[in-house]
Each structure stands twice: as C-alpha cells, then as structure tokens.
Image 1 (spheres, rainbow, N blue to C red):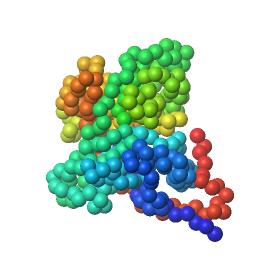
Image 2: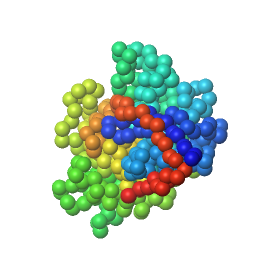
Image 3: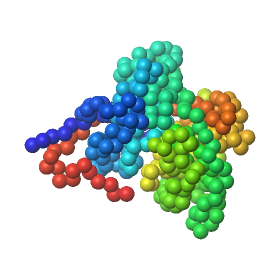
Image 4: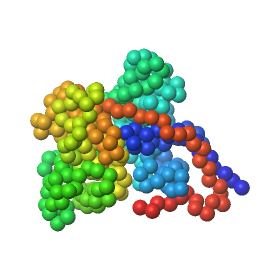
Length: 342
C-alpha cells in the first residue's frame, strides 16, 4: 500500500479558514512567487484537491503552500489556493500566515510590534503585528497598490439593469450595493441569504469575466474577475478600538470563484473597496473603514496614500489557530482526491 501524507496547521481569520501546508510537498520551482504559483498549478494541483475537497475539506476551504521569498527582502512566500484553483491575493490568508509565522518562530516576535514582509503572487506585502505577553493580536498589512478600474459599469441581474464598480486590490472585484441588485427589500448581508448572493454573484461574474476592465494593465497572470462584493451599511457598528474611530461602518458578503463565500470581510476585497470609496470622495486618507463580514468578524481598513491612480491601503484583522492535521490518502482510497457537492 502506498500512502500519501500531508501536514497542515489551520487558522481562521474572522471565521474564514486558512489551511497552511507545513509538510509533504517538495520544493517549488521558479525564481518568483508567481513562477512558483505556476509550478504549483502544474505539479501539485492534486495536493490542493486533496486538501480542499470533501471529505478532508469543503467547498469554501482556503489554504496555502509555503515557499521561500523572492529575495532577502521578505521572510517567506505564500501560494494561495481554494476550491477552484490558485488565487493571486488573499488578505485573510496574509493575516493568518503572519500570525502562524510569529507563533511558530519562523519570524522572531518583538513586543510591542513586529514588522516584516511576505511575498504573495500579487506582490510584496509589509506586515506589522501587535504582540503582547507573547501573544499575537491585531495584524495589519500594507497591500499592493489598489486600482479603480471602472465605475458604474452596467450589468443585468435578475432581469433588471444596474451598475457595479470594478477595482483591483491584488485581485479584481465587482463591487455593488445590496439594494441595487434586487427588488427584494428583505435581502441583507446575513447568513440566511448566502444562497441568493451566490446566485447573484454567478450572474455578474459570467457577464464580466472577460471584460477589458478585469485585465491587469501590466501582468496577465493577475487578470480575471475573482469576486463580487455586495455591501450595505453596518446596522451595529463595533465600538472597540480601532473600529470606534471609523468614519464608515459597512458590512459585506464576498462571493469569489464559482460560488465560494468568504466568511471574513475579505482582505484584498477590502483594499479594492477602499480604492472605490476614496475615488468617490467618501473616504479620505487616514480615515478608517470598519468592514464586517457575513460571519460577523470585522476588518479595519484605511487609505494611506493615493497618487496617479494607485491607492495604497492598510488592512487589519485577527487570526486564531484552529487545528494541526495530518491528512492521509491511501492508493486504494475509493474516493481518491475527494469530491465537491457544489
């Protein structure tokens, strides 16, 4: 009998899972994390499927492979994956990965704040983490520059015309108010409405997946519409810091890939959202956005600077460890690499 063994450490960030592969995968080929992502797609898609598919995962699982940084300017790299493949950005994964690195000693923790960098497919991210009494608290990262690709782009949803904004925050998103996509006044960002939002997102994604505005201006491997963000005002804004000082308090549900739902407020999506808010004059530099996800967790976001269309943003949140696992597949496993029921 041949047995394959993969080890992982699992975290969640504001409820969104993150499965970090810590053993059982050979080194990746390539000079940059984008090259290593291509190598992972070519040689290790079976490992991705093993870890995200049932019975070991589920349709909304997320994770990463670890790899060396592009050069000495960062501590390590992460190659993100989910049920439909390999993504270019993952804010909740950046927060969880940074927490893992500090808690395991991969990065030496310094109190009260530890600063370092990580490489991801969309670029290099600067990270700072609050550390007190040996415990990691809030993690903030400065994302790659966000770009507003287009405002008021027309789509048809449920037989009615509406508009969406398209922005890039390491991945491309269509951003739309909940109130504009349906005549149903009862629809809101709550767990009971997840199925309806998946339907709406699939419709929007089908219309925009090949749109010119989701083509990255410099790197084709960063192109494509990754997700759809539905937002509304947060009826119960958080009152603890740093959210008490927020200028805007919103909640959102982000549907990405083919119907995968982000439990967190979505980090790269929050960056894209900030670019649109700044572009519309609704959020100035330094002002805080309180961004709540469908599961109830909250990220902070703020615009650090904006120049020549490039919006530099900072996203903050917390991650918690949820388990350590040894996943096994025997060569006579009748379910093989698993399955998806949606």
